[in-house]
Length: 236
Image 1 (tube, rainbow, N blue to C red):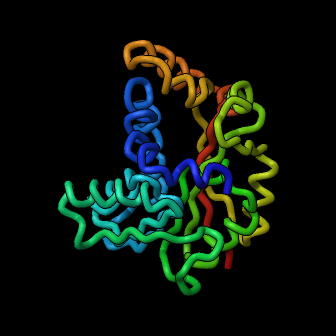
Image 2: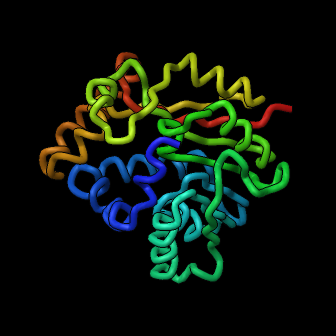
């Protein structure tokens, strides 16, 4: 997978959250967490798998709210950061982190109520195979996000150190149908791409975020959004 070696470096894992979710990046973190909560609720005793859980910022959040959750990632360095978060939250005995390959999930069919992946499909070399594998291990729901092809994300995409795959709405819908899933909801956000928010201080990011949200409530906002959140269900 693109960037796999980069994410496995200890220094990258240790600095990951601070680099991406401080300053203006706090607006990204807040929006992503709300998208996950809205899609997966209610959480009490819900059996969930997070694919590519990274440092565990979603995994720990969901466990705190009563989910029965497993976080899986290819990078042991990132998982170690997640374990530290779980320990700090007093969840190390109830929250499981495990190293594994998203292309060969080590679980039986229909094992989870829901499977989700954030910040994953832009690096996936085989998106069709990955989403089918996510579909295989859930009995109900798959939730994921993508970066959008026709958006400001494309302006700086070439500069990312590991490359980044962008998707059109048509491509996402083809992925969903091909995995025998049904799209039930979609959210679109961030006219200004993530990279912009990460590079500016919070006080400067705030008015841009307000503009983003105002524009997002209009039809043109959806078309210009750089990120989309896709909520799907298993078809009968």
